[in-house]
Structures are given as C-alpha cells and as structure tokens.
Length: 176
Image (cartoon, rainbow, N blue to C red; front, side, top):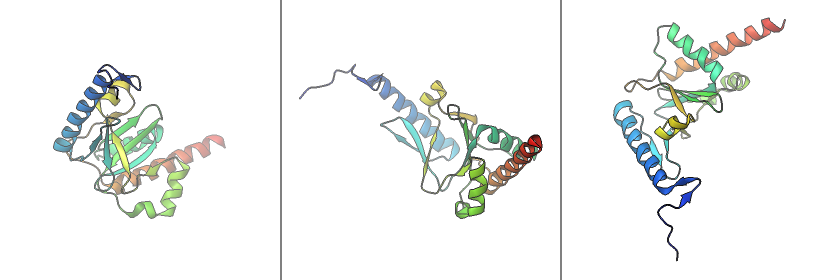
C-alpha cells in the first residue's frame, strides 16, 4: 500500500490548496448561516457551498434579463435581495423567500422557457459563492445578502414576467 506524499497533486491543486479552499468554504458557509439565514452545506469534495431550495427560492435567468429585473425591482422602491452572477455562463440567480407551487404553472413555464429563465424546483440545490469561486470569478455576488432579507418569490417572478414582456415587445418593434 503506497502513501501519497503530502505534496501530491489532485486535479491540478495540491492537497494543501484543497484543504485551504475547503476551510475557507466552511468559514463562509458559517457566515451565511449566522448572518444571512442561508443554511447551506459544504461539499468537501468540491469545496462548494450547496443550498437546498425550499425555505429559500431561486429564479435563474440570463444576465441581460437579470439586469432588467433588478432595475425594475429597485425602481419600484423594493429591495432586490441577493443575486448571484455566473459570469462564464452569463446567468444570474435571484434568491427569494420560500418557493411556492409556481413551478407547476405551465403558462409560467412556457413564458420563462421562451426567455431562458427558470424556477429552481423545491429539493434541488444551488451553489452559493465561496471564496475560491470569487477569486476565479466563477460565481460572484451581484447583490450580496443583507441580513436574512430575500424578496417574496412572487415579486421576483412578476418582475421577471414584466421584464421579459417588455424585452419581447422591444424586439418585435425593432424587427418591424
């Protein structure tokens, strides 16, 4: 039986770097729990902070639509709440209050499908930004969580629908 040397590489990272990334993720996860009511868990194999959808909802969309949704929410005097950017894929995830049964609404599904948006299903998981994600710009906060505030799920869904309709109208008018 051979023992791996302490400096052995695993997926391009040394074991010490993996350990450090996991410790950083654990510290961040504790912060999310204590300060923001985001009860995630760290996947120690990947160093990611996983959050199950249920008590926290999520609406995912292209970044361009996300910018309009964020603008619409703030222009109405509402707080936007936490938003995660995924720069490489050009997507944003809005964290909301508890999810409801909207994911069963086929009309909503069709509207969101047309604009490449989706509602995260209860029981599914999303990934919260970890220090390693932020260093590599893989996953970052657009709006960091403030306390445990998250907008109502219905508010974000309504703002997404309105923003999607507005952009569809602009596209139709521009192509006429």
